[in-house]
Length: 178
Image 1 (cartoon, rainbow, N blue to C red):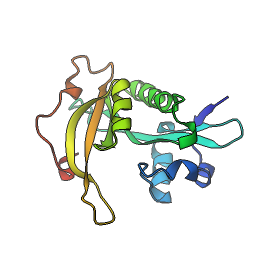
Image 2 (image 1 turned 90 degrees about the vertical axis):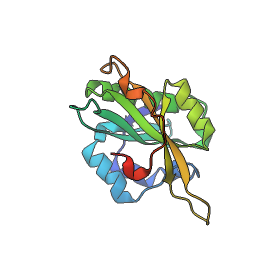
Image 3 (image 1 turned 90 degrees about the horizontal axis):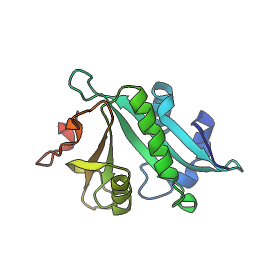
Image 4 (image 1 turned 180 degrees about the vertical axis):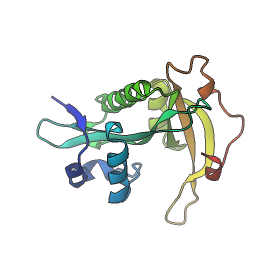
């Protein structure tokens, strides 16, 4: 049986099988530790019965309550290739959404590569929609051009009028994002 539990520092030494996916953003150890220290409830791992890590989600709460922009943010969601198509990503997203609801968020957002249509379609199936396109959000390597991202959002119950998901009519640049 799969166990969903809080991510721990020890997991940093066991999640390479997940992070080796080319579409998974990999960060330095201090970045993961910052999230673990500041938003531990938003850092969840799926563990197989034998102790192998199957996937994880890392997020945070951010924004302004006064401007109705307080929200949950998905920083990273990844499932190891051998554990995909089991509903783990959907379950991890559901947990992050529940935490964001309890914290009074208006919406949950995430950024995804425009070219990652598998992920875009999955998020759409989970109720997310494209709020805006962020030009050259992802830095490229190997002399390839930077890649655009979709900022996808899902309104939570606090956003009664669903104002947080009304799409912007024009793309933005990374420096225009708060």
